[in-house]
Length: 264
Image (tube, rainbow, N blue to C red; front, side, top):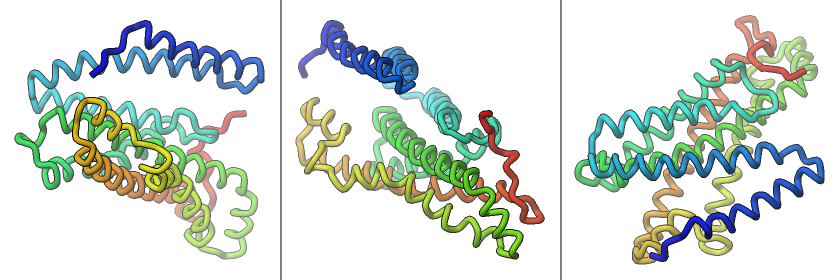
């Protein structure tokens, strides 16, 4: 495999700098977020490279479990971080981490134990990349679904309250919004599956091919990942949207926007 030098990465970073400058000149208000995200990306990936080397060498289930929990907690926090009308901190964190645990974690364990079945089943070479891909994609889907739900409910609050006053049940009032939120969260992964192999070569498959894996074997793993990510994302969004929906109404079926952190 061709080794990349720091200079190669520096050349690539120039493109991010140009994009940040362009967005600043166009007043898009994303330059700061873009630069911070790029810096975090470099630091976090370098750290992960050294940590993964340590984990792969030790093959310790307790160390693996600790890393998995750290990944889960960070993903749970990030779900709520960039939404327009986010849930209040601990409410959003609890809902996000619950949905991730019940979807991504269960899918990862099932894949390791039943489908891939390495020996031992917690082999870090398989467990960490698989969990990372599932958590990352599910986190994005849940975040999009939650953002769509919260934003729509807030913007349509008067319509929702009028329908409640007319005697409609809150399930009936929010059913369409809930369905649209799930659909919004699922769009990225559905699009990715629909164009895979025609418009784009997915990241995992490309990485395996570059490292020397036979293309057909890389394809098999990519299909498995797509199916696991789709299932994990779908169940994660449904769970999170359902949990938020219950909290958006009190026991008397009145709209409760106190769980949202409204930016004045």
